[in-house]
Image (cartoon, rainbow, N blue to C red; front, side):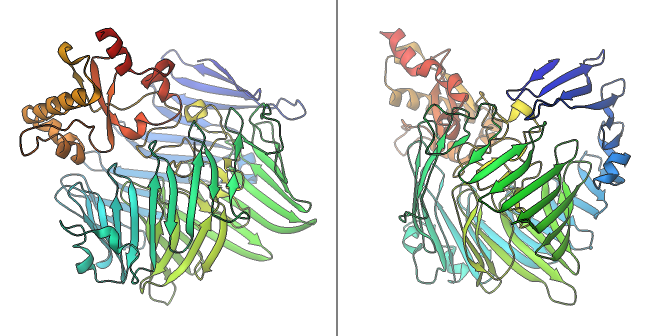
Length: 639
């Protein structure tokens, strides 16, 4: 590709060397008054195409590698323009063991060191303070315990499918239940002893009867429709909330049972939010939203939100660097300065510092990262260490340390997609409790004894702007979209401001592209296939149960022949395809999966994640072109 012209007339031209490696990007913006500013980013490469340097108007970054092509360091030198907006000199350094595993990362915030077990599970993370965050695992490799220098954070128990069913949280113990599709159907936090609760999943016990027990300060249930969308929650602290969706999976409404708190939404074809008083034919022609309810927006030539007016008296202004990262923000209320914010990033684009002032009170914060997850937040005299669920951005616990005081341990209680709803202390008292609007804005803070800024997975609330920092972008929860265009371009979807398809089942921790429950990007037309089975011709005319029974039996026989396949398949699939007591096989798809008739070769039936089989978007054109699946084709050809 040598040129990209976006719907808003922003143009990008790409240049390459003889080896086909990108060496230069020239961008031409498009302002609201027709102005056409330009900017350039250059890339220096070695003879095998490795990136040696990146140069733009704000800084030069140099990259060094070892003989195995592993990144050893990044050194940044700011330009005069970069220094004016807060870009500083910086060096990031990385070290590896003989197996290529990262063992140390050194930044301006200190060094992180990593130790692993023989299976490459992280066992010890050593912090710049010298503290050791230890991870203990089951023999299956799933996390069993977290402790900090021997101080227990949480013990985790799992079922036969390795799903988390119990987690200790100080004096509370949280329990989780799942429906037949593997979705979280209920959860509660109880004051009953953990050793008693650990037996609730034993045969003969009905654990869901304990959900509303009087000893449970927190409990909730979740219900889903056949497409897998959340339709109803029953929450002890928030009551009943119902959700409805449009045919393409977009959220249509959130019903709390109270007119004042309920919400409805309209969208144009590109998923831009529309007011209800607009024509059904209205749309945001360039995806740069100009107005939403009582708010007005203005973008710069690069599509970044630079001005937001709310009501009659509030004006917010935003300033960005040459990579579209927010560096300064101001809020005026009735012409008077209400708040300011200044932000700094490292060479990997992670926010490492901010200085904010709200109503005359100034606050400085620095952030330490473990990969692309914020690990520690520091302010003068106090720090907060964040711990997360394995392989996730859903927070599990927080350890606060103030100078001269003992550590304070807090626990997160999240919803079905990992958004914090409550935070409790070691004694089980709720110290923070929030109710959100559909797209993540806090509707009500019922308890706010301790500051808590995490929101949707990967998001951090900035009080001075009302925006959520979302790793590589900023998100506006009032309108449910990002304030800048996607840094990965069309790989993140056709609308470069879109957050996710719906906020009840999708997340976007990095600010790049939304993921559904199976981890498939919203923009992808591809789907995952565990295995494919070719059906014999004599059963082509039979129904789905016969096809599924044959596929389950064939897959079971393959697992006997190929042990490595048995190990690779999800546990619930392995269990489902086994023959029953009389030797028969199930005529249904395994839990969380679908047997899908390939649309191009219908005699081939594929095992794919059910969430992908039911997902909206481009993937449906691959699964069911022209809204016709392989099963119908197979039936037609067999007649």
